[in-house]
Image 1 (cartoon, rainbow, N blue to C red):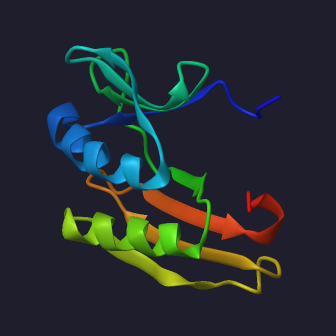
Image 2: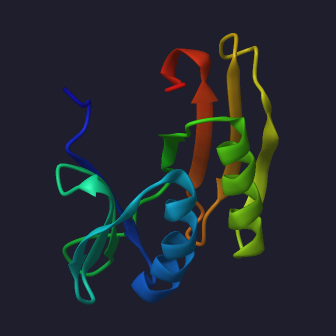
Length: 130
């Protein structure tokens, strides 16, 4: 069983965030699996395994201080995630590299998305699918 069915963050500008994630998520192997016009877009492998971005409104205030870590299949994918994110307006929050302070074999990169969320791609040796 997967840990999550879905995770959702609320964003200031759905169009801006969608343009960003439409380019970034395929690098990790995820595609749009849910699209409710002007409200929410979900990326993943199915609607029961996805990351959603939702337009803020009166009933859905902006998410703050969110950190999400996406599994990557290998270190090259982490590098590509980082490069693609920066090319599309993200800010660096930690260049790709090993993080032995977390655990042996933990290779990650961190970026700040258009709404200030800390988004990570990680390839940990225990999670690899070689």
